[in-house]
Image (cartoon, rainbow over all chains, first blue to last red; front, side):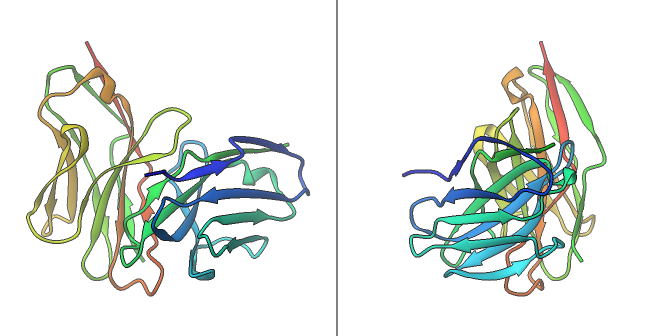
Length: 113
Length: 116
């Protein structure tokens, strides 16, 4: 059984640029959640996708957007990057009917300069 | 709103001794509670969960947690700590009155340091 994978591992961007982060769900999982983990903090919920639609959103501005594809993989897009967007971005997938049971990928470390 | 408090930034314990990492929560409805561990530059690794049933939950690597509804606590425990248990531990909660999204709310984490 393949776990959750994320790409890239690390990324450096300049303020104002746009970034796309990718996530492949664990086999058999149809729900994807994205979290932002700033240095020294716990993960903060960005949003969740189920059947290719956003299923809930945390306290993040609209410049954070996402997609889920028919194979349940997902993208997180961030426009107009700000310095405070520097963080570890974590993707988690969940099995059908147990969206609360979240299995995390290794994360993408984004640095905005 | 749901919240989690991990009152200790760091817990130090000698190898072979029992360990406890504390967690209290606030949530609407019945809580779903989780413990995750994070090693340096890694994602979160699932340890255990409480959904319903027995208050003592057993998880991976010899860890267990005790759900206490009256004290709204879910402390993580292990009878005998190993140096390899040294890591960052996160408690998380999800309420049952939170709408459609299964949003997990995490604490700020507790660093466990196990020494020889």
